[in-house]
Image 1 (cartoon, helix red, strand yellow):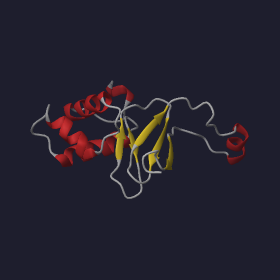
Image 2 (tube, rainbow, N blue to C red):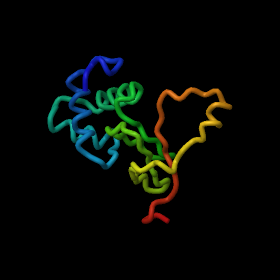
Image 3 (cartoon, rainbow, N blue to C red):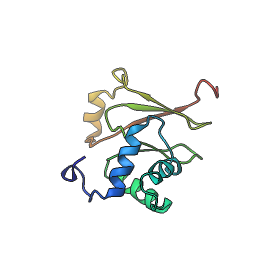
Length: 130
């Protein structure tokens, strides 16, 4: 994680948040991240964690996942993958084999839309909730 790669200053708080977020695959909420980070930075506040997560998501350092009516979840893995998100319990599943999920190039050409970045979220019901 080098400062040149991102549009913002890398503070100690951001570095620790990123390290803790990359340790897990559970797509934690801001509150859960706060609990993880507080072990290493006892004086950090919840508002600081929220503020840093917001700016880190804006700068594409992390992925912010939205689920209707649920608290946002975060992913430290910004590689190409998509997320299956349960609209009932909020459980998130990573899908890394996304060969079959594609947008036809002629659709992009016709729309004159230039893709900068993106992550795919698919909302539905997990096995437990269906």
